[in-house]
Length: 101
Image (cartoon, rainbow, N blue to C red; front, side):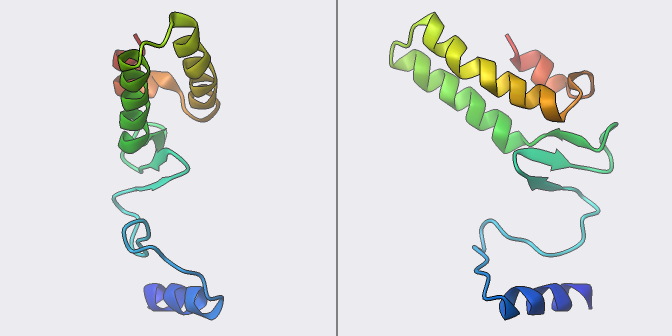
């Protein structure tokens, strides 16, 4: 019933839902939003989404492959880590700690 209602509201406002990015349903297994994974099973309920971490690692590989200097890489990483720290407690996400190096 709630899913039908949500879909009706979205349709009434003529909001387009890209099928590959939109899922309206139960959130028991968590959901991704703005780069974070909201998950009731995580210690804090909030971690960095896998896709976000993978994109970050891919960007670092691209920078290195194109011969970026250490300063350029640092200029990319600094605001990214600031964003990470603003949303999650890193002690609760060992994936981030492992990949921080």
